[in-house]
Length: 567
Ligand SMILES: CC(=O)/C=C/C=C(C)/C=C/C1=C(C)CCCC1(C)C
Ligand SMILES: CC(/C=C/C=O)=C\C=C\C=O
Ligand SMILES: [Fe+2]
Image 1: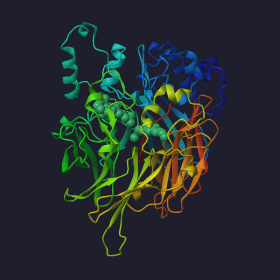
Image 2: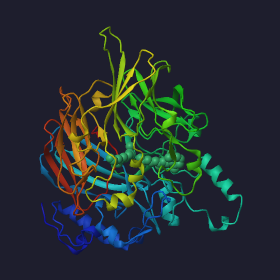
Image 3: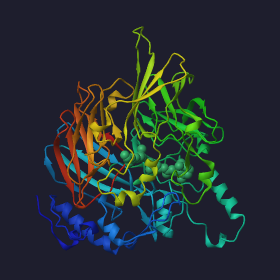
Image 4: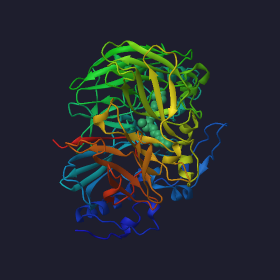
């Protein structure tokens, strides 16, 4: 039964909502659950912090040392921690869910940015929070839950940061302040991986054998979860000797048959390209590529791309930096450094033989996310002559990394705060040429100069494709406040936007039996200006709303998701 909730408990459920009447449609069970949980929340000391302290990052990038409760109150729910460990309930659907859409959409992301007295400073630091939308014959059962990583459990227990997160390093114990050797100990812990986080807050994947795993940049942050209860099952134990390398790409490429990923080598700068068969825990090294730049560190590989026959290995000028890895206080580039003079490259490896078939220098670039790549036969001789690879590119402007600091996100109100972003298209010739091209695929103004958090029809992975779904921006601001469907062939863009929203990655689910690339739905979870949130379903073709379901509380921003079909 649909009801209007305006109870005291719900009124104060989320402090951003404190002066807002919550009008939401949800089932009686969900309301009951929600009210009970909302009350519980206030006895939960852990989540009831009222002050945000944002430490100064460095002198080149000053931020106020203290933000007040006022800042937190004014800030968008997208950048506000979840108020409780977990919730589940049914959402009331407005509109009609297609009958074929049965399965679970799981989204991962950092959802809790404070622990004890400590407030995190960067979006990527927050503790992993899973959100599920289980579609079942037109109904949506939903929930969220914090991932029980060692980092989160230790933080909860000791009420302080215990592991190195993306931008944060735990303070050395008081007893170590005067110990001249404690620094050496910290270095050992860093390079043995002991102090690194396993807070798997970046993405979640469904392996070909059905196991569901949360991931981040550290290999120890590969954690299996139950997609139904959102319970943490335990660490994914890689059955190979490759864990010594500690880090990997946060975005492996997964199909029903296999998983590909990149393992950067910090000692002899390069990347191992590895493949894991579905059903196995053992990654096999298919090949290794040596970095071409003379810098100490390999380029950061948050993601990469594959075609039918090749793996594309980006070597960005944004490189791991030993100096910055050792610093306790972050720099504007965190653990990285910008080395454009050493060149930017893309390498291409054969999936079959592990041989490098192309290695080209390209213009400098900064990307988190590759969109897709494919082979093109331009001479019509029946063999690929060029590789096309698309990514969300931030105009080689590294400031994007520091712009994702919570203080910046919390205080941005509709201006052009971020560097403009575009779909960057690499053209990599396979004829031995030294250089590749990087061009703008679609005029950036058409998607509001924001472009990130992308998905495609997964059936087009590695193949010539036409549509990109991503967060774009409704001008005049270039903050990703809209969903966009980009037709990279016709070079036009459809946008979906509502005032004051911050949507998370639009995720495309194809309709079984579809013959058109855009025949399916796009799912996103939207954080609202008034402190609420809802799941939205857009028609893949028209990019118009077909259904939405409001959560009885506000959810923060999320990163990446996956689809688990109903068995
Ligand atoms: C959330 C996201 O997209 C990225 C998360 C990145 C993390 C957690 C990076 C962690 C690291 C350390 C703690 C030290 C070593 C380097 C690096 C892998 C960047
Ligand atoms: C949220 C984001 C960039 C947004 C800017 O346009 C990047 C996230 C990267 C990690 O997955
Ligand atoms: Fe990512």
